[in-house]
Length: 503
Image 1 (cartoon, rainbow, N blue to C red):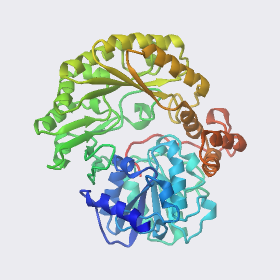
Image 2 (cartoon, helix red, strand yellow):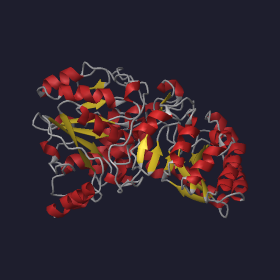
Image 3 (cartoon, rainbow, N blue to C red):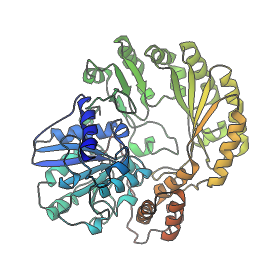
Image 4 (tube, rainbow, N blue to C red):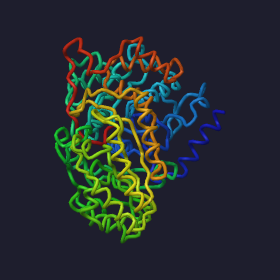
């Protein structure tokens, strides 16, 4: 069995382009607590992988949550590059993207034979470092499990970590506790501000191309970082991230490999880049397929050529966001998207030859009523007469470091009723693909919770990870959201938001 599992890793390595190998005194296992296909689609994860290798005497080897965890029971989880057991590394650096990946962290530590709780580990165990996009909002639930939490953009911080790892364990921790951007549970007296990497580190980009990802064989690169908008639900809003930093198209094009036929432009507000049409036109003229991570309806209406270029590059579905179900809700969110713009986007998509328009939608927003869903159904009827339509529907989850922090979560039963009501309204007009309100409620408790929420997550995971076990764990731990709790020691100061990519 051990041979077969490692052979799966070697088969994936054989199909990668750009894998890095290096002999170095400091070896870091760069861990992603979701499967390979997800982790290798992360621009931040790939960027930090390259940054570690650029350090004068450090190397990174990747590790992922197995596709089938049960297959690895009794087999030490190992790295990809050299199939070294994770327990043999001096440091495990986890990139945690969102709240529910905390259980992936638990699985990987257990498969490696490493105690999950920081308090149960000794100097003979690897240093466990946690960072990632989760630090944009609320990393506090990670504190019981991490020796170090890296807050914010890690392109510079990772080099400080590599330097510190050459020291004995206690000296490593003492040094990191003095640096901005590092939180040492049990040593630091407050959460630090999130660090922003220097502009010279931009743009983040792929290091490895592989067919085994969510974005098959696509080279990812960011033409911009941050956002200039003020959507009240978003951790990437302008007032907390210092605005948007753009990369000139010439620099982006210079960094894209000549053999990269599929290119993904990644960022919080890519279509807000003032020269985005110029950049996409250059890529399409070069015969490349182009994907964009964040299409805004108002920008598509203002730049219709962009829609045509995306269709010309081979895209079949045009995806943007409605977010709120009605004009009233979108205005409350400070979301600069109107029904008229969504209708115009549908017309542009049909004219360009797209087969479908997909809209992302949040339900369960504060103040949402059935009349808002009725309004959405009317709009969907108009759009569906123009082009086939589908909705990706997610439950609203309030995040820390946003103006909507502390907003209540719509109860699961009511959320399920609204989704059923929406499904009934949209029958014959649009497809609807909702996420689970139950797991959104778990995400909410972690997004708004403290260290006790992290410990409840451990309890729930140990009890089998069912929704019932999560409910029981939160109840037994007495977990309440930050909106309903008081910070006991008076020291907790949540950080300001910075930018992606992170560790």
